[in-house]
Image (cartoon, rainbow, N blue to C red; front, side, top):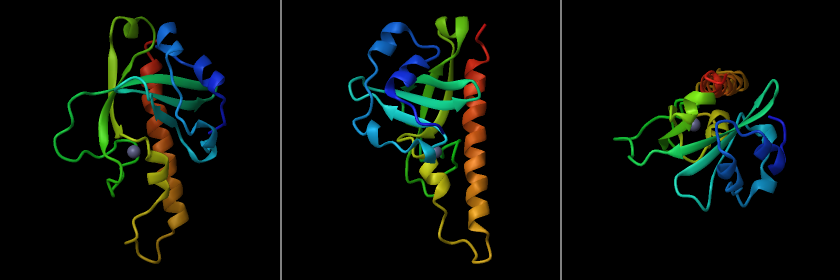
Length: 164
Ligand SMILES: [Zn+2]
């Protein structure tokens, strides 16, 4: 994805109130984020428990969303629905996002089960070692990255679909 400044990200929030955006705290390592190698950028708010954020590139610019981590842990190990990480390196948890427009203001949310630490991009690029030598690993990696991008964008499109 494109590289963004903190201000550009703050300007791109949808479905969040002005006071919520004011309280956003960026990750301490923000300056080191390599946006080139990400299909989305997610981080946790160090100052607000269970609050996290997500930024994606869209055709008309970046979109940032406010996430709330569900209180209840899923039973057993859940698989991330975006990267389908088979190594389960990063536990999947349920995040909810307020929907766009009036629906979101009324409290409508969408949930998504994804890597708690937002490691999907890294997971999509790291392949299990057991693949047959004849497997075209670059093609496989490309497919996994494309799948991840498609799923992230489908979710964000659905979140924003209720905007007037
Ligand atoms: Zn994931």
